Image (cartoon, rainbow, N blue to C red; front, side, top):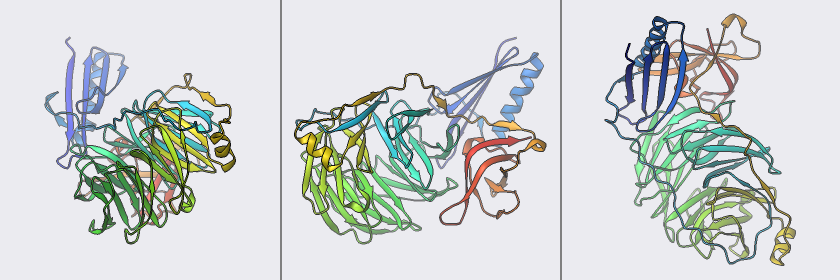
Length: 477
């Protein structure tokens, strides 16, 4: 009997879904391939006792997808989403070497970084996300289907935005899809605040979606190449080729616009200010309330990353000549040193350490204490620890969920249920003690109508308007 193939696609008019699902039945073997349209995707194979059981299992899987909106399609009829990766020629710095305590080589150019209380996160162009202790010890590795654009934190949730147009929740044992971006958006940067996702793009646009991944509003700025978006309760700060624009949270109306010297290539925010690094070598310091410039900082080349110490007492920048800078709040340059490992695509400061991710794929920890910087300026450097993670296996992103019998549910978990409401699939808590009218932010690609899931933790959002699932998820039978 010849192999039977069923090919389905889900490509919504809004562009938020753009994926395929292919099922091949060959005798007793069922092969399922799924992923973003135009990409290779992931494949899972199963073998059954006889052909009839294989066909039945395949029909069940196909039926589930059709009920979710998938439809038969011709492979190759639709194209994959547009992707732009930041390409720069990194020149070796002529400055003295910075005091690098340790350096981890991730294996590919790295854009994503987040430094938390306990761990450092780095994501690279191959879709690898590593976690490390603050002393540089590798503690974990995730595998995402495409290159990592950026890593952002929202309270104690960690998200990775990727070239495949998806944003992955990294809070559980395996990565899960939290958001999907419209296919016509060539993503440059992402940020999240209380579940609200902001996306800036190649055309200079900004798109805002809520915790349910539902479109809220979008705007087109006066400039293109929007490498900066920073989300806050009062709205979004959008940096592009013509400067920085603040849009109101609910309406998307422009609040203020500030011109910059050069195109904005990176952005940072503090509680009352935003910072924009530009192609002309400047970092602009702007009031979040009014857009007024309170200071600016001069670098010797295009600024590809910037960050501050808490409150903005010190301002750091990285240029495309493999140098990093430190300025006092008033604009005085305190020092300039070379990274020794490429130009910093992104950076973050914490506890007198400056962490950078670079063009050669490194996550480097620089001792930014006054004593260490003074010693480095005299040519005295610490012994650098070079770290590798060759033995760590990738924990791949997946839509598969472990199943457990409902009667065997352990105590301590929370039960949620998927329901259809107004053409959309929602998730609500059904365990006692929770508001059943609130939606739950829940992975998109594991939802099945009528299904119930056991969740390790449920937390109330900062706004109090919805719940957020965290930790391990199991489907109840």
